[in-house]
Length: 201
Image (cartoon, rainbow, N blue to C red; front, top):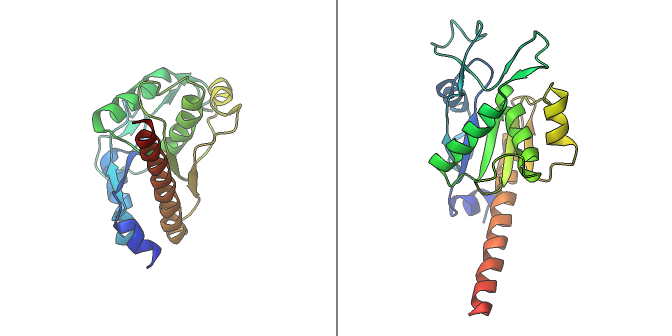
């Protein structure tokens, strides 16, 4: 039996999808429609808008209609000094609570920077403390936070959360393999938990 069939027999993995800089959840949803049905059929996707409205011109203006949003904002042109970075961190926790259970985060561009940082911050107990641990990340066109203080908090230790990284349009076959691995890991954990509960009765 193929890995694709095995995945289709299991529940869909639910992802909170964080859009790019000065775009929107609706725009990311449209962008991801280009993915093959064989991939999209494995996933349940939620597309929130970022908490900050855009403070400048969007690169997608003219291709997509506003409004446009930003996950975090900066007080300088280098984007190294963040303003109210706690706000998007708390907002993501609210989204996970509202739309949960959420298995993982998918991030594109600025959204991927936040997604990766949140996994590291959660592992240290510095963010997402009121929701279950993230099980995995999908990072598209990702980058490291440019603010050194937040980057140190998020990445001073290795982030152990499984992740799949896309730098271009290739790799969708790899995604199917990644999803199968995640499913198998979840099933193994669930079987161990069920076995433990039965032995405790």
